[in-house]
Length: 83
Image (cartoon, rainbow, N blue to C red; front, side, top):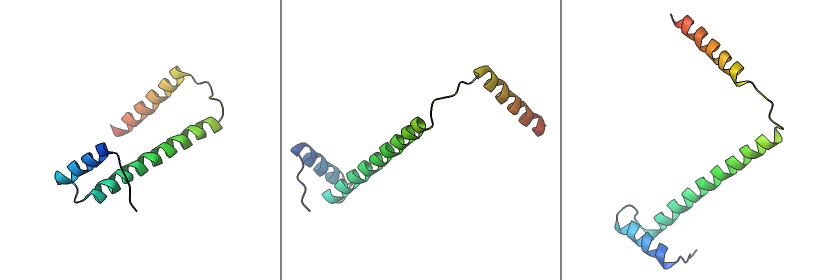
């Protein structure tokens, strides 16, 4: 497979090889594609999480003060058990 890249990227790839970070241009391209693949996977995960949130229905109201009391009670019980 032959891939043509703009001159800017060609120079950048050559610089990466010249720096010793990569052994040849193929390694630079493979690493770039690996990173792109990871990024696309993260985007897909985020989209799935957003969809799951949308599919879960409307948010239910909650009382912040009650949540805080509950957390403090749990914390206090854990601390008493450690004494």
